[in-house]
View 1 (cartoon, rainbow, N blue to C red):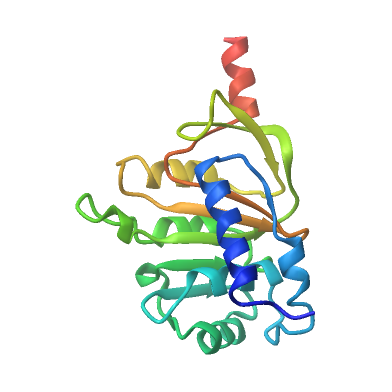
View 2: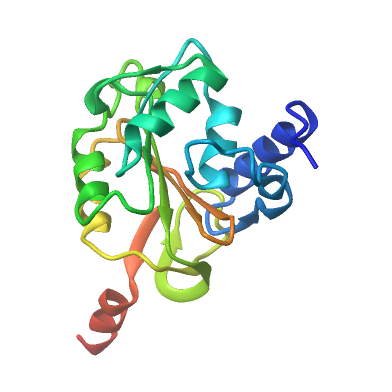
Length: 206
């Protein structure tokens, strides 16, 4: 079974748009990812490659973090004709599952936040994580969420604090997209407020 570059990538795009317009909605890319099995020469996640095929073209730039970064950048370039550049100049930053501790924080810190005149010029960070599930570890609020919604992401580090700092001068900032090993996708646009459950519990105690 092979990927249909029109039908299947349109499906991926619709799911990404749905998850971006409704933060907290977890979309399943498993059906489309299965069609890439055995066709991923660089060995990166099928979900990462799907998103690269969906979002990249010759007019945009990207950067990959991970032990196989060079091989993955080469494959993405051959498939999309997008150009690999330094992280601070990239439109899209891809973090593979073996990118290493602190890589997400570094990517958030160095990523282009856009400008007040051109906030759409900001970078999008796409990262592989552990399992993404409905849960109560993180509380999400903001546009596209009726009141609040809870999620859990198997991801360590202080990325939430770094993201908050990066996005403090709206409309500049960065948008995050997470995919896990089960091809579940979660989008966290810059307008989404994230509160860790322990912070909520602290407020109740006080």
